[in-house]
Length: 500
Image (tube, rainbow, N blue to C red; front, side, top):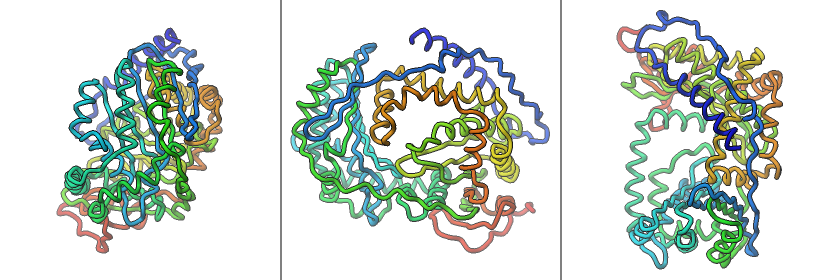
């Protein structure tokens, strides 16, 4: 395996060096740029990387219902702990978005026997890290700790105290609320955030995944009692998965888990929210007015699939062809050929509910029209034409190469197996992953594009100066306008002087 990985790294390094050797063009008109980007397909790739196998963990289940996955890897004298609470932002009360996030963020700010400064001191003394979070549009709370393996006992002692006995001190919560209020204001100045917010609202409607941030009102309601209530309701061993990876044996890891999490009391946990998403019924164009902006942030896409859907792997390959990297079509077209942008990409997300397939780029105001045209062209081309064999082979090798790289990180490997548990994937899912990637053909990729790139229901979001780009945007359909606060704007702006 090490020889295979070494050969892969050589090929990967050469590919990366070539990709980044080219710098984006300056503000030269696109008409002056050559249009002859060619795929030479000359990079030597070892076919053995397509036979990557993920090492299996040892699985243990404690009497209290806690599932433990243990991966023994002795290459480095380190150990990592990952605890997934299977409840997060989707479980937030409707009138208090962000409660799961508040609870996770305040975990390490004090326990029944440790203050926040004591926790920080112990982590420093151990040379360890600890972080916790519950991101929006997810129903997971992630808690992670890592350090040297000879400090594993002390680290798990500290981690378990933080997870099981948080005190949510009022003074720390007050400081947190002040920081978050400032962050909310800053978010409204970020065009990327504004684009994602409008896109998620367009795609998900009333479904909780439409929410990407908390609110000032929700922060005002944040009290120690509210955080403790969420913690006591959802933090339970029967609602959790513990992953342990690194320089530790299954026997040692099990003993630690029993010692520090064995007395964690289980209790019934509310069921996860319904995951049915209707999705948009028609194509819509949204323009978020950001006066003075010199560029447009563009998103275009729609619903995709659940992580457990059998289409996941072929759709992942279709996305890699479309915009999954610097060798993909969007990047090669909008940056390398047209010179419109520094980067253009697409991404497939998936969860226990349908995720999204979305393309994105940021371009100068005066090429907004051209960029939308090329983006639409690439989406249509993926639907209408089968991917050439050489291009498809490159995409599949790229995916399996990334998979191979993950083998170097025990924490990443254990997280993949935790995915299997959380999403209900087949127990042998990763045993056949590389084989399933290799089996995908051009016909299947085109079928994925036609199924998940629905141009009649495409949601397009542009964030920019409406006076500069409205005329360009309205060529693609009737425009709904919003301001940076997310409020509808009825009137069409007057064009800027000198524009037509």
